[in-house]
Image (tube, rainbow, N blue to C red; front, side, top):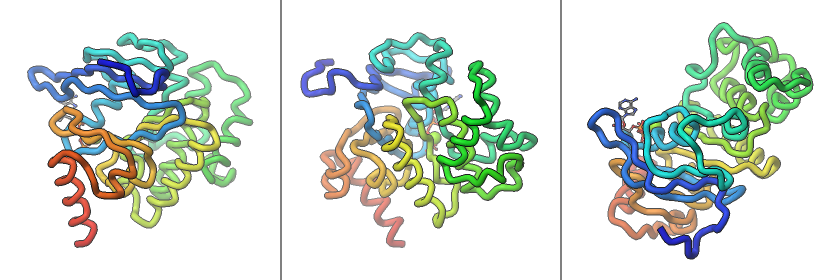
Length: 255
Ligand SMILES: Nc1ncnc2c1ncn2[C@@H]1O[C@H](COP(=O)(O)OP(=O)(O)OP(=O)(O)O)[C@@H](O)[C@H]1O
Ligand SMILES: [Mg+2]
C-alpha cells in the first residue's frame, strides 16, 4: 500500500487485516489509518465485522493476520502491559461490562491495582468527576445507577489509566435516546481535553457524522468506502452501498 497522501505518522494503522472464525472469513483485507487526536468512525450493517476489528485492535482477539501498529509500534498478537494501559475499550452494554457485585470504587480501583498504579484515591475521584458522576456514587452498585450513569462508570474506568486511545463499540446504543446525546457530548469533550484518539463504531450515521472526522463503511468484512464527515453530511458518498446505507438510515429516522 502506498503511503502517499496519508498521514505519515498515524496513531493507529491497520493494513490488510484478515480475521476468520473457523471457515468463516469475517474481516477481509481491511486497511485504514487514524491520525493523532482524530475520531474515526466505523459503520456498517450488523455482522459486517465492526466489533471484530475493535477486538483485534484491543488485543482481545488473537486470531488475525495483517499488520496492526499503534503509535508506529507494530503489535504482536500478545500485547504488552503498556499497551493495555494506552488502549482502552468501551462496550455497548454497560450492564454487561460492569460486575453486578462490584461498586463503582471497585470497578475503578481494579485496573489501577492490575497496573500497580498508586494514588488510587485521587485518580478515582478525578475520573468520576471528569465523567460527571457525583462523589457520593462511589460506593454504589451497578443496579443502583441509571443506564447513562453506568456508561459513565464504564468510561471512567477506561480513563482511570490515562490511555491515549479509546475504542468505543456502540457506546450509546443501549441508552435511552434522551441520554445518548449527553454521553456523546461527554466523550467529545473528553477527547478534546485529553487529546485522545477514538475509533467509534456505530450503526447510527447521525452519531458518526456528529462525532467523527472521517469514517469507514464496512460490508461483509470489507471496507467499501472511506469518507469525511462532510461527505456524509452532504449525502455524497461515492459507492452505491454507502449511499444505500445512508438512505436507509434517513428513512428510518423519518419514520
Ligand atoms: N467469536 C466468534 N466466533 C464465531 N463467529 C464470530 C465470533 N465473533 C463474531 N463472529 C462472526 O463474525 C461476523 C462479524 O461479527 P461482528 O460482531 O464483528 O459484527 P458487527 O459488525 O459488530 O455487528 P453488530 O452491528 O451486530 O454489532 C458475524 O458474522 C459474527 O457472527
Ligand atoms: Mg458489534
